Amino acid sequence: MEREYQICTRCLMDTTDPEIQFDEIGVCNHCHDYDRLIQQRVLTGQAGLRYLEELVEQIKREGTGKPYDCLMGVSGGVDSTYVAYVVKKKFGLRPLAVHMDNGWDSELAVKNIEETLKRLDIDLYTNVLNWEEFKDLQLAFLKASTPDSEIPSDHAIWAVIGDMAEKLKVRHILTGFNVRTETHLPRAWSQGHFDWKYIRSVHKQFGKGRLKTFPHQSFFAYYRRLLTLRRVDILNYLDYNKQEAMQLLENELGWKYYGGKHHESIYTRFYQGYILPTKFGYDKRRSHLSSQICSGEFSRDVALAELEKPTYAPSLQEHDREYVVKKLGLDDGEFEAIMKLPCKKFLDYPSYARIFEGPLLKGVYIRLRDIYRALQKKQTRMQGL
Image (cartoon, rainbow, N blue to C red; front, side):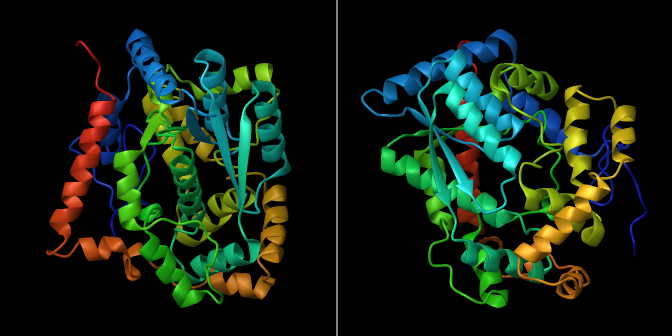
């Protein structure tokens, strides 16, 4: 039986998330998760600054005698660029910036990265993926017909950063993730980012070649790194406002806005702006705008009006379609055939998640998850309160 349509009374999340739940006044579970995560992970004002100052001192101590005291991923987007600005200008850290070139960087993203790091005097390490391998993997995910086609890039960048951290013996990894703008993320819209078994099984079924050089990490390597490396979502400890950050970056670093969330990647722009809404009915702007409603950056009415606009300019969308189809080695007929394939789900394919849902190993998974959550809570705890 098809579910009756409903939209959250507080944000924009609706029943296009098949797992969404609403309370008695119509507020969704994502908003309740937002409130909980704000309490658990976010420190503002002087409390946030005190926490960061103590953390920065620890990072500097551990980095003594090393060429870098921390790592951070850079994409050319606003969040990672602002992290680079803050850690160098405000806190005087010595980060190594890590970028993964998957073949889809826009010219503006490349320019933003180059100009930012030059002005901030930050070294850059770039890992360039083998294009033929990566193209084969992306095509495999499109043919698998799940909404998860972006996760191979996410998996690879974290594998690259983890490898580099262990090589340099640097423990702290600074990220641009933040609760205020990135919490309303439905599991059904994309999952399996760190599940190498899932990625490998999709490629085995739909790919043609072998993944000889693709950066990856096993389930146990991922959880080992959660315990031995320390991820710092630094924007959770600052009074971070995305619109104000963009203005500062434009003024201080010559940074240029690229038009939308994650639009620094041509493939991401087209995937989120065309493939996801057209094939699956998922508009990721709902997620991003909903988080910003809860953080107070937008009113709900303003966000609803924004959602009425096209996902991005139709002329650019048509250009992206032609470019993406050609770059993937497809013709229009082949691409349309992929778009018409029946929609599948994450659990339709082998994965670590399916193994750990079984009674034998579920307890192991829960224990690992609880250890990680305890570490997160400890890392964000205010001292002396």
